[in-house]
Image 1 (cartoon, rainbow, N blue to C red):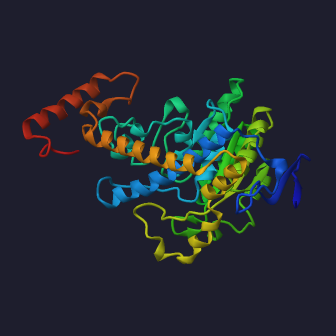
Image 2: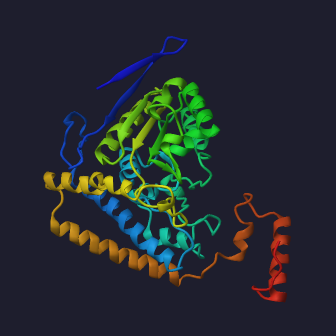
Image 3: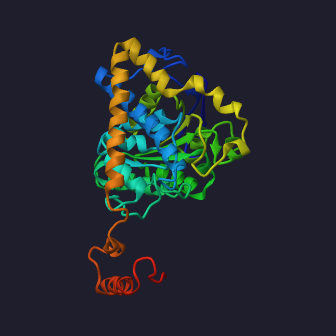
Length: 384
């Protein structure tokens, strides 16, 4: 392993591991047993099921979007291990600040599919009341904080939560998931500096999937890795194979242990690849070679986990077939449920959650809107 150390002006030293940390090779064989996490058969099956669930959801929801049944969708094809592995390595009380490809982390923690589907449709049972785009979930009971579309804007929130945990003297950890493009934002750099200075128990997890929409990772930085940016701020930087779910569990567990011990934050660069489009509104054929994603198929994180679990005796053909059938049935149920609900949140939700209690002024404004709707009908009421 190649390791370089850099000393800052105070004499402290921080490692940069330029090796890509792996446990499994591309074929699901253990190549670094000293890093292999101890997982039960039930844990392996749960990991496999969640990753397969995300894969099937992405296939089916993208088709629904193309049919015009929902307005927008984002897939995680090929990136499932980055966030599901991270979620598995953490405690339920730890905080997750996702970008928009980490819904698998919430599903791994028990996010109900019916609720997931209602959010996509923005219907009357959407837990965020139609205030977010599809795939921008928020699950308070799972400490899964609202997905933020503006690039990098949630990173300081995660660091702030981590610092609050330290001030409150509990050992919770906060994780910020973000793409390689977010490392070009001021919020990333400010958050890195603050987290290191305050020794906040934070994990800054950069999902380097090769592309920030149409901008390649090579256009984001002149440095050899994103992980080595950690040195300038005084924290460890770790480079990991983001398609190896066992390696993700290993490095995130180590970073969490450091954070809980009061040793401060860690920057993790998870190398993966966005095999699909950026979103349902994107056409990657306009800016990348179509052969590029095919090169990553042999590194598929789901297939690598499947082969490893099979070798461990945790998976067999009957379980795999039964799991796929269960997932299809659960998605069918969730879709039917979501499409049977009233299509919009109640009008009164417009003024809810602005203050602890709805103010008299907001009640007056709501009454004025209701009066206009009663006068003109819902389709002819004035806007603005």
